[in-house]
Image (cartoon, rainbow, N blue to C red):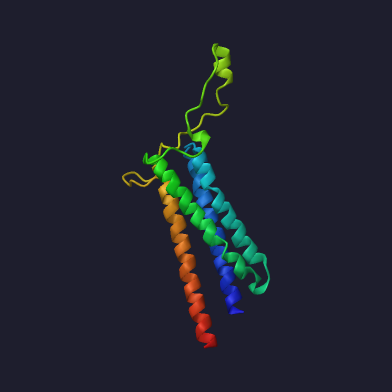
Length: 171
């Protein structure tokens, strides 16, 4: 029973970690009015999935939610990978894999044709990093990757402690 309660605490932790990440992204976009690039928008998806994993774990009865928690590992690894990809684009190591991060291709011979081929919304280039903390050379994408790695580390530490506790009980 205590193990099931421990699972619920980890599910709540994962859901709150996802809410915090998305909350900061929302704050930067809507309060600070810093437009996200296309890679930034893709980097938000693992956090949404993490919230779902945490909520499903909390809602499942007993220890049934425990195996669901393991889905956070590939989700957080995907978040770290996306952050690494975005950091590589920001640092000029490689071009962005997404077409929305590239300069728009404006075609046409007349001014009307050129205006019609422009995108409806302006986009931020993916190689322009957003620095939130003055003097700290970590962009939002790098901080997001470090945050995902820290949450993954917390999950690993929790699993280690739970497995030691279970071994102590049964052996």
